[in-house]
Image (cartoon, rainbow, N blue to C red; front, side, top):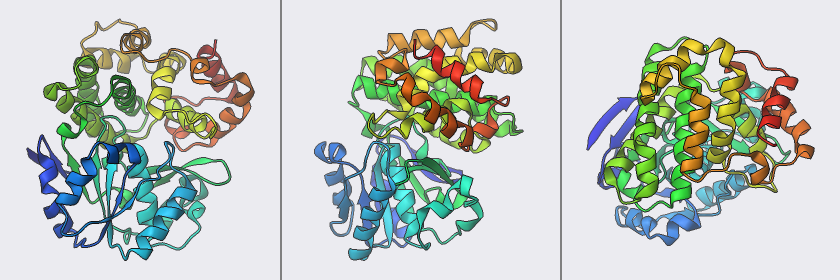
Length: 375
């Protein structure tokens, strides 16, 4: 087990869940709200969390796959009625992002919309955000160390809420918690981690430390994901994947790109309940091709990091990887139709990740990317 100090305090390694009492003591949390979901509760993991607490905690389990403003309000009401003074978020990106929304509104006046990045909300988020302890149970989103929360508002928009004050104050990355994660979810969350590493590395912002972390994370995914999918009890592969996801989250401080501007926009289609990591897996090859004329040198470095030849077609290699681990190749296989595209394109153009794509993209560019993945 290791303690890592980078953006926040991270306990990493098999068995690190046992450090939860010390994390709560460090943050002076005596009455936490546990934010998770019913699937995780059914595994008995939350009972293990409860056993580490001084007293049983209030639980909020009604977390949608794409967390919503409504769910944030419901969890906030429980936080206040139970007299909570902090949050323990247990799960993937959805519980952790919802916990960030609750932590924000527990200390900041409503409405939530005013804190969205595209509404000029970044400077409105002050340091006094309620403390969050994040315990990821998947290896993909990096939300445990991310400064952003992605939340679907009641007006239909899926927006980013971004601030260093939203980074959880303590993180416990215990790869034992991912043992037995189903193959499909392992695959989809693993491609989410890979998309973070690739997109941040390709971002035009200057941040060599983030680049180095992203390259290392991409290599870990490429070497370990298929093993983790094939054998859910392979602790070495699970540890590598959890580190890769953590590195993706650490590096995306540099900014993402069109993969995420589109996946955020598609994720706002409420009736489809599209999985974020799966969307990233499907979209990434088409976006790499759209950006190819400006990222040639970076593709060569990515190829080296994942063990491919310098002139390998990374987009095609990702498509082949997706097929090997059972992920879809087309948005149409996920229920997306051409009727949804105008709204998706409009939302992508205003998404906070749009600005850090390697080159400016137009509505026509986004249309071409989506068309390539619908046919």
